[in-house]
Image (cartoon, rainbow, N blue to C red):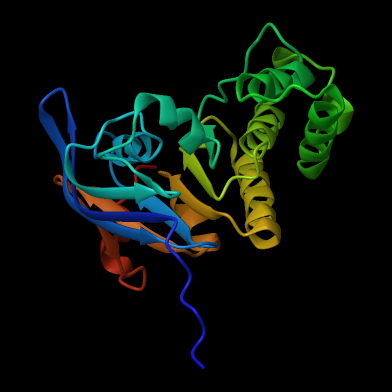
Length: 241
């Protein structure tokens, strides 16, 4: 008997991404299955962030097909978008932490916003996620008391709160120094190995792409397509320093 194929978490077919009547990317086709690691590379303004925003339902789909975590993005209702996002974890370049709340209260706010009410359950989830990224002992700290690398670890813990099937990371190492960037990737790769979420990461960091191999999608000239990383000759043109 042949093994059952993994059901795709994301299926994009002939998708056009349009913002304010301007075409950002045309004819995007992408299939993502559990445990995939996919990099989005390309110059600033090439459509990487727009693709991520489309997947999380921030940019609406009007042309082509797009299914994410069981939702048809052409037909999804506004009221269903929070349900979609519970299946996704998102990590941003600038952390997006609330500066007037402690690390613990940042995560508590997210859980309460997604409908959690049981205090013991909330406490257990926060503790387990912060422990998984090595930040539980700093749960009382305010964001400004943490280094950039520590803030990004908290952001990863926040992304893991609902045990997402897919983690989307938009330039997550952009504000980190070299050592912190590699520490972040080691953390992300451990989560990838242990929990097996699919990961889609937009990046300009060629060193990370080379050290942690995955599928690479190049976005340029309104197109986003998979490239063969063995063709090193053009790689220097794909990423900014």
